[in-house]
Length: 501
Image 1 (cartoon, rainbow, N blue to C red):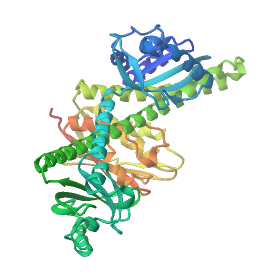
Image 2: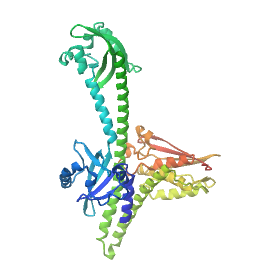
Image 3: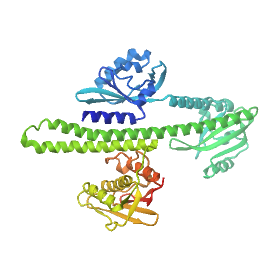
Image 4: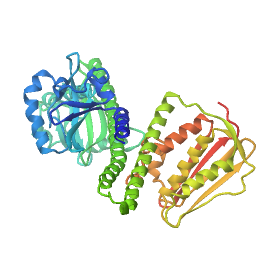
């Protein structure tokens, strides 16, 4: 059992894209996943047994010991660094920025610490670019103004604006753009900027004349767009003095705009990736921790039942251990299936078989999972239906849909299975009256590791439907669904009667 637990643990570690480093209370490295080995430049098993200091830059060694002791004493999950930059040391001596979180845990009476490590070299580069762009905006010699949509009063102006227009910020916040535009009335100005309220117009660009505090005027090019500042609607204006620098400043503003959009895109992609990683780690942790805890508890209780008359209690805990191990094995098989599908290592085995044989097997297994009062309605007159397909894949697909229907439906509900066949295809429909899928989640339901919002507290990995979809598409089949939250779901599989790859 311990060997099997270790194998499951190792496979789980290597399925995580972040680096994972596990150390004991003496800072000795006891476990490292492949991502961490690659991140720090070590070969397989080369880090095991080494001191944690080999992954820490030399100039941080002195303080690290105290930090580690404080963490062990506190014994609480936390992020490393607390607002300061932290770095890792590679085998070749190079140093790179990292983000790490520490997670204490105890197993078999020993204390360990698991560190999740992310190489944030690229993120740091993005942050530097972002700070650089912010500095351009703040220190730009071009004038930048922000003013309120309703009152038109300035709310902010950069250094370039104050220097060129001649008013300081205290004076400007009492003024509106009309006060520096000698050729505009307020009504004319409002009429022009109201164009930004139309959905078809995102930005206004026009040339005008501004008047300085000294009374002198100068030609400018105005870039104006509507934006949000907290909960306020504002206009954001970039003013370019085109007296001598028209060509130069136009090129600069275009570059700033492009770089800003690139930065927004990069940050949005990073945020989406981090959210997916967080959800995946949370799901994996929960799905493995719960059955492992049950196994550990039952194993400890078995030692207490030594008398012959306590055999019934022993069998109860043995059954618990068996069930939990079978569930872990199912999860593990799902992960292995994902890996094989990604690498194209699936070898499908096609035979001619009676559909009734597969359906009866699936229904038999499903009946053992039914909740109180649940029942499955399925066609009995399908003895004449045969397919030339991969029998195991069809069984896997139908089992997944029916098990989901049972899991996500309440007691005393009915699950309907409908099967029809024409000359070319066979269609399977599994309909339930369960919790349904929220409309906002439906576009992601076949995505790997995705769990609908109303199913997060239920057991599951979010892998099953993704695996089914990939298998069916490999067999030139399809899977689709219709669902209404709180009313139920209907999943449809359409599969060719004769497999062709």
